[in-house]
Length: 151
Image (cartoon, rainbow, N blue to C red):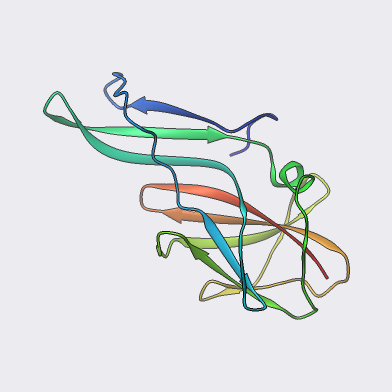
């Protein structure tokens, strides 16, 4: 779910086609705990759904935000320095527990999936700069987050 380059933009698409004029909801922010430090990581694309009342009827509202791919987001990020064989814990600002997956980015595409257990990612052991995409899925949507580390 990647769009062309640009600033993320939220768009509301109510199921019945009417706009609601309400504030757009979005996924929570993601936090990575590494070496006892908490770091908020950059969010990218997301899609999010909510129910709201409109003219005394419940309708579904879908929000889609398109941004740059993790490789492009990473260009503007300062890497987190970590030692070899480090684990990072993924948390969310709303304390939710979505299904998550983590992937290395290699060149301009998603690469290997990283081992994950109980929201702990086993980070790469190779020396250098690594771009990691975290995909989180909730019942009402999904989001992509980017983390840059240097070993």
